[in-house]
Image (cartoon, rainbow, N blue to C red; front, side, top):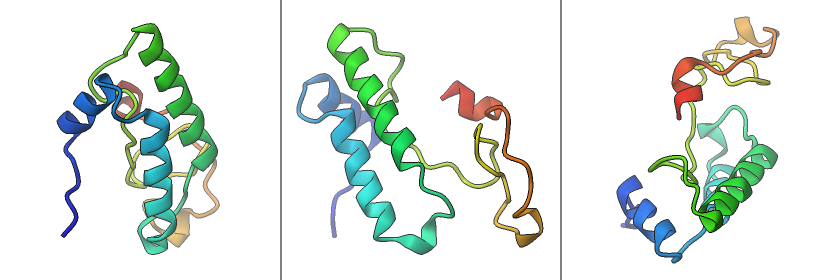
Length: 108
C-alpha cells in the first residue's frame, strides 16, 4: 500500500526544498483525473496558478501558513468563488456560481 504523507510531512518537505507546491499540484491533478468519479469539478488551471504563487512566496520567504502550497479538495457543500455549489444534486446543477468563498474556504 502506498504511503500518503501527512500535511505536516509535506510541509517539512516543502520547507526543505525536497518538493514544490507545483509538484504537489501536478500529482494531485493526476490522481484526480485517474479517479474521475471522486470529483465533480477539477480546477486544474487555478490549482496550478495557486501552486506557482505558493512556490514564489516560499522562495521569497513569505509563507502564508502551514498549509500553503498543499493541495486541498473541497466537498461540493462549500462555496468556492466561481463554481457552482450543488451538493452533488441534479436539482442544483443550474445554480448560479458562488460569488464568494465560504468562510472555511477563505480561511484556508
